Length: 508
Image (cartoon, rainbow, N blue to C red; front, top):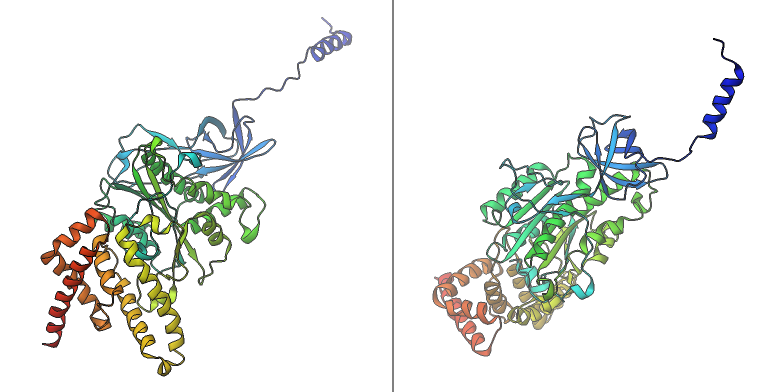
């Protein structure tokens, strides 16, 4: 049977007239390009910024760039199994991690998976890594001290629960040591800790884990989130938000948490790498335009919550590494402007043997005396003044030491002894009542006739002497947290008694 051309044309016209040009969105997309842990995905028009995407092999990614036809996704983990043409599905969920007290004492990666070889974490609770920071009515002013156990910090740059205090300095100046000591000092308190290691060497993280375990500050007390230097930039980018979500859960349960970000310079570098691979326009120092928001939305989540929300707190200690002490670089100035003060560690002080190498001249706490007990506030006042006068005089004395009068020489002598008192070894954290006793002795001039090289021996012996013979002094400081005239008299008597004993032993 012959087919006529007219019949074919009639069929084609009917088909064309009945064509419905409706665009249908398929529930999946397709990988069109992949490399350097970045995938370009075609489709998924309904995907949201920050949404989790699931790849064909089970890998996960986060939608970062939402363009007209494509999505730029950051792959979390290894991208070697993802190929062009693979199917990608949106999960409808924002990235979330396991949270809860079951994580205490464990070491996890940026996705919340345990990496300490101690089996799975038994918890059913999860929390999104991004969360809106508490509003002003939801907060309370910072008024409770968070003791670090470090004399130079607790006396001169006090930190309160709910504060954000930056630790800043060049590499190898003891930044991590201060943060780890602060964690160790919480072992006998009601404050939990989260330590986030970003871009650190694996052996350095292992050393921190071992030190905390030996000090009794890990099990049941601290969570360690590790994104080591050999991991992808996406894991380094996620790690601080993972740690923050874990700390935030505890805060909203009415608990107190200390979180350390070590360090946010490497975090910013990882985000810069991701942004450049996503073809985002570079700005100053090649960082993307939203690098300030990267850290502000993280650090603003630290707060002291109002009593109506349980009264919990999250105290943040971000760490920033500078180059040759340049605090005016882009990332340091960003984080300085976000935080409530900074502890500046000086290279020269470190190599002079003054450790912790805290430069009390440019270090500041914008919470100040609100974060100190009354007794510490009283002894810290003259300490700050004496040290400031000592620094000014020491600079002048280098030029003309012979021309100094008696008062100036006495100020120099006292300043040298105060500097010696503020030296402290790592992990040798000191309860606040012991700090108050020795700082009282130093600021009241009781140590002015002790040789500088004997100060440490005097300090150690004095603490033992007070514990053995005047335990009521420590007890009263712990209970009342203030210095009365009666307690001052007891302290003066104890100092005088021990000093006579110490000098007699020296002269024998």
